[in-house]
Length: 324
Ligand code: PB1
Image (tube, rainbow, N blue to C red):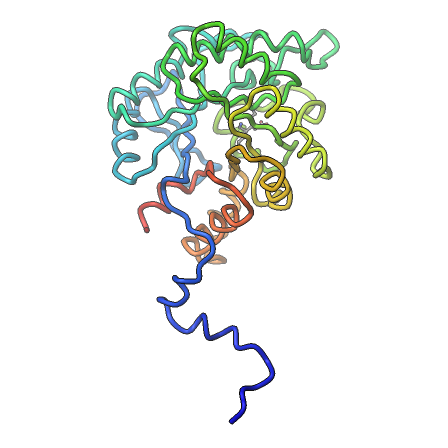
């Protein structure tokens, strides 16, 4: 019998073994960064209602968390602070005894190998909830914010932070932070810039978790317009030119096209942030029985890797790693 004229793609899908051999993208815990919310006023853990399965942690809960992550081979955490006080300038962001500064020590005491990525932004620390200093007219003062972001970065590095991750979206902040770190003796501390960060509706649950919603207005004056993809590549190239060692696209799933463009435009490592809204949507549907949660999580993280992410910041990290 002659071979049919059509191609038999299914020859490479007939068994788990052949599917494994031809699989193009792999995901391991080594690709994952797990976000942590550390609350200065909390003892133990407090569930985050909008993010089922996620908790705010007190400083006393971090040692156990570090050990659990180590046991799951998850190499890195991204820290967000809920400080003991807020003010117009966000000064608790660079306090020597700040909640994140203390958290770094607790985590490393429990697991010296953990890689700590410090989110650098003012929104969790300012009374107005914006990512930079606010003028009298309510606009965010880009240039006046740069020295504060730089001071926060140096403060985190002094506390032992391994990677500085500015998420503020002020222009010029990567260059300002690089200069400040180098001047303070931290020329070996890499910067992971949230380079292509969009003004997204998918941050909603995070703002509840971190208490960081803007008191007025929105972030459209500094975060990117969701309609723009070319501009994302320009943002990334700008941050690399200013000294970013790694760049990030955020959110992830609604921006996989941007992630692919960024991956194809730069040679530095690219991160993607699978944000709170993406997480909560999936968890809510799974809780209602509308989705097979584990399979949807696996497909989500695989899609982000396939689109070009070298590393993924995700709240799914522990759950996924447990089921490997
Ligand atoms: O998971 C998330 O939604 C992340 C949200 C993100 C954290 N870097 C920002 C959300 C926001 O814009 O409010 C925080 C900005 N510094």
